[in-house]
Image (cartoon, rainbow, N blue to C red; front, side):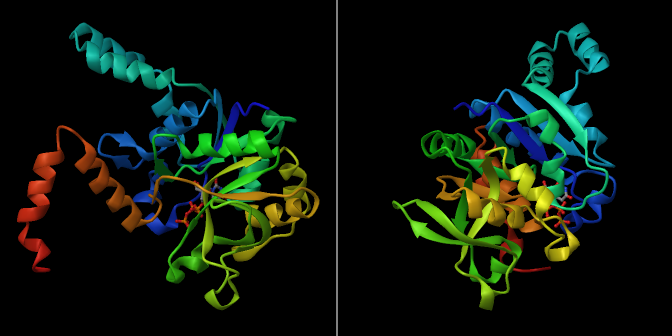
Length: 292
Ligand code: UTP
């Protein structure tokens, strides 16, 4: 069973990144010269997705502009024979079939995903959170799709999280089927460390059967007064076994300031043109010895 559609929720308020997110979506923050969300779209496409639904809200217009054609800029570049730049700009607007749905209010991730129900229909689909970048030769979403094709049930990407971060994640417990796959037993949104069933947390990648929509409709408002995807997954797991997969790759939570800075440093160090200079800069900087 092919997974060709993906939902990218990007309607959150980004309060961890205030004040910049007052007027600009966190998904548009640049990692060197590309916004975070561009990397997310590239992962979806490299995983075989050809139909992308962005869930957006107020203040998210720049996401639509970014993936749209830009005739004035294209004409400007073309008249000056800046063909490489022109190609780069044109490529962005032809990456995939992209659709936009507005979430009226940021009522939670579950609510955001539910807005895509009509577009998804009766098909399995991937979800990629718009502020998580995951690097790996085989994209994380592709890894999940392969598991889905074999298991035919919903699969969540998980990783071990440090104990002080457990209360910021959806935390699972499960039975290990092999060294990286769990059949899900329990999932709890942002538990206190004393109540957490493990330190294995869900990150921003999922493949769902369409039955998740009915589960979202049935759940009550959850943690933080939001419609929590985690609660819908727990309900789904009562009628269809859900799986959790320890993916391979490096994940950057760019919705968090520290995760964002780590992403920039790592991407700069991996960038051919910058690698040596950045390494030199970090090595030589006196700020590493003193906070002045
Ligand atoms: P987060 O909880 O990380 O996003 O949601 P947030 O609420 O924007 O961030 P903070 O915690 O206030 O800093 C994960 C993803 O789900 C989307 C966000 O845009 C993000 O990509 N989301 C969240 C929605 O689309 N709608 C919502 O109502 C909530």
